[in-house]
Length: 132
Image (cartoon, rainbow, N blue to C red):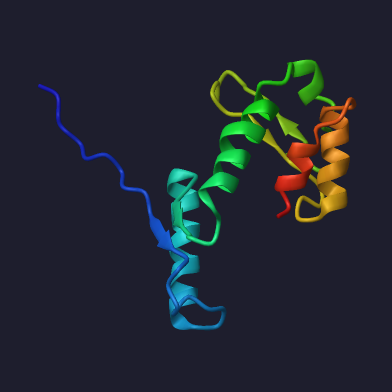
């Protein structure tokens, strides 16, 4: 007879919490919880109301979808000497995993450079919204 096991619960971090400031005990305990979530589940759920629904949709439903739908020949152009800092493709042991390492992803120049590599003909909507 099979046994029932509970589904793992993902950590939910409320970044709207006023107590969540660097140096506070709340910050330190939250950092530990996030690390645990990454180590055990690979992700967590972030609650943050400072990003408009329109920007969220633009980033996650439009831009990232365009990125992951690119042909493999384009994706593998994103290389880096540092392991896992370029394109990481699917493998037999992780068939649903793809990742992009983007150098200087928090800067307009870094995102423009990456965007120009992936879309030489241009894709202003990608680089314009990501560093916002």
